[in-house]
Image 1: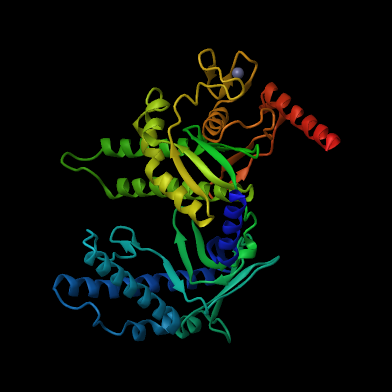
Image 2 (image 1 turned 180 degrees about the vertical axis):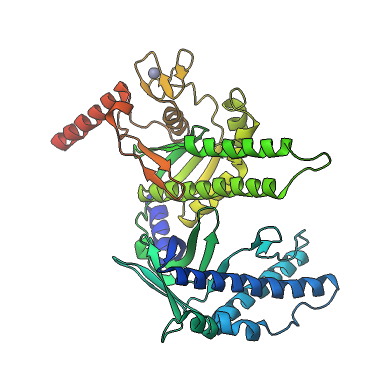
Length: 451
Ligand SMILES: [Zn+2]
């Protein structure tokens, strides 16, 4: 009865909730001229932000009020259009307001920074007010954004002061649209859009979520996950890690060539930034991909191994400091938590002692064997070692889960832009995985027969 009341309460909360989601998609100009125009628009936006921010910083450090500034809207209206110029000015104002609020709370924070830096120049990005753009989705998705009169004239945009861009892929969430942010990603040579939307409750597809999942975090496989619904996911990190190591080696090579007394160079700093951004991009995409899958499975709680445990138990022995750097665990767990929160999923950090050597089927700990990616137990259980560890961890946290009810693992690979499923190749599966799978099918048939 109590459980039912709790469930009803959950359900009511969800009925009245409007949740915020963010659509992320690439946008593509239709021609070279359009691309040039877009670049100018983003560059002018950054220029406006930086000029205004420079003036405010000067005033701030001179002990003056930061609110009395030149009229930047007037200076940029020709290029950006009035609404976009205002949107950037408003965003800068709110950044300073947050800064002052944090200061009042006694927090040690820095005043708002610039879009870009001296070495790499301005960061190409802009902000389009929610009522100033249109996003059409369907077979040929596109977005239209406003541009200023001067840009329009320069590029002969025709009657409308609007630039049309192709949207790659289908934005996932449908709802009341918020401010659109467009950024140019230098590393991927891609224009990327971020669109927050308020999604009505009806899109919540699992209001009575009560399933659980456990993660094993590793190096070759970034994340192995098992759910109480019998799903398993494996995110392959080999290529990503190889790329990271390659950049690290290049940094070391350049460092060895520095003149005496010189500690870094422009090229080295650039490689560091590139390395970090690549990793962060893949990590953020992994968090989102995984959480979306778990949300669809009705998972409410995700267990992640305690960081210190993870670092000590199955890292130090065979993995070096570079791997720690690659993972940046704390930032990964934070990112995972933020993403999970968006979907109403709770992340719980728990100790995962002994998970790597315990058999999820029979509980044996001493005579099990881990050889690379393969876990073997005298009881005959043989499976992917990281998936096994996540399954054992899940059993420790969630109690018994039925043996033989595991579906064929979903394997995912990073292509520099997104995580996608690797089509299952039979020869890659271990004999035991095949057997497990067959018994699953038989189990289902049997249960249909008896139901
Ligand atoms: Zn066993």
